[in-house]
Structures are given as C-alpha cells and as structure tokens.
Image (cartoon, rainbow, N blue to C red; front, side, top):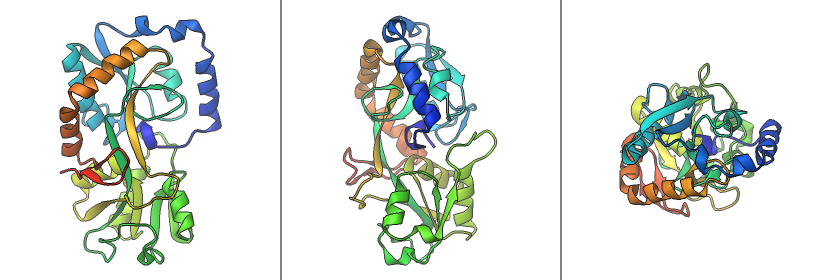
Length: 282
C-alpha cells in the first residue's frame, strides 16, 4: 500500500514528527540540500504494486519520468514504509522526494496532488456481489469481509453492522517478509472471505496482474465521514518551497503522462472530490 493511505499515525510516528519539526533552521533552509546531480527518491523496496527494488511499481515509473524530465540520474534510498520511514530517509537528507503521500500528511511538505483515488470493494466477478456499489447493501450482511486493520473503511463497516463478520489483516508490517494485501486477495479468490475492502491503487494493479477472476468496485457512494478518497502528492522536506514548486511544475506539465502510467498499471482514478470515475484503469 502506497505511503499515502496505508495507515494511521502511531505514537512513535507522532514523536518522530515532533523531532523533525524541531530540527532547527538548518533543516528549514533546505533548498541547498536537494541534489543537483541526481533525482533522489525515498522508497519502500517491497511495496508492490507501488514501488519495489526491481523498479516494477507505478511509483518507480513516475520517478523514472521525472528523472528523465530533469535530465538527472535516478537514485533510490530504500527503507520499509513503516515507523521511522521519513525520519531515516527524507529527514536524514539521504533522498529528496517521496513519490506518494496523502495530501495534508503531517510528516512532509506536500506538492500539488497528481492523482485522486478511492478505496474499493473486491469480489469475485461471478458472485452475487459483483454489482454491489455501497457498503449499506444488505447482501454484505452475511458476507465475511477482509479489511486492513485501522484503515478508514473500518468506520463505515462498523456503521453498517459489518464488523461482526470482518477478517482483519495487519497494517504495519515489513513487506519484505509478509504481505497482508496478498493474503487478503488470496482469501477472496479462494473463498475464505466473500469480499475485501482495499485501497484502490493497491487493489486495481494487483487484481489486474494476478487475479483475473476478481472485480474491483470503487466505493464512490459513501458520503459520511471518514472520506474514502484521497488526493496523492509527492512529499518533500519542510521548507523546501523552491523544490516543491519545481515538482509542481513537472506535475502540471506532464499530468497526461502520469495519468497514462497510472491507468496502464490499473489504478482507479477519480475526480478531485471523489464523486465520479476519471479512469478505471486498463
């Protein structure tokens, strides 16, 4: 799951944010810290379908696009997307940008968003749930539903009385050694659960590449909080306004190419307010 919607802030992350914010004026004046010889990306080495060390993720492809447009070599600092990620990568000046962060994230300074996506319902294409579009559908009441623990849809499930049959999967894991999203989709495919709720930029590409018998249904009709759509930005160090503006310019000028990468990967793209589909992914 991309950085941007993968989890909730733990106490340890909150502490690291406090330390980062109090790092002093040397960190605030960050324009000189950005490399002029390489496009230095902070990334998880085992966070497919977003990023991985083999370079197959859609965030890898966006990083390649930006490095090419900047005419810089692409370099990675790899670190698991878990507690300490920002502190040990971006804040430590080992790299200059995180390709995917939810807008408004407290640990980084956000660029303008380059995509908006939404949580999805994943079911078998041939099941009687294949036309379900909202979590209030009574057909879900007797269905075991897989969900990543602590993710925003859990509140909606509780509101609709679906937690009694929920199967939770761990949120904060080192994906080099375990993959709750793979476990979740395998369980739907094998009939262990009847459905799953998963962040669209994870569900769409994984189902497209490995689960041809599953369907991905964007949850666009959930109007009560918490919202299930998120605008995804790039993250830079606090105070790096010059670098942020440079990245904003690249996003604006190359949005069509970014969209093409995301659609080809299978990411469901929605409007900025999460009310309608922009592209369903191929």
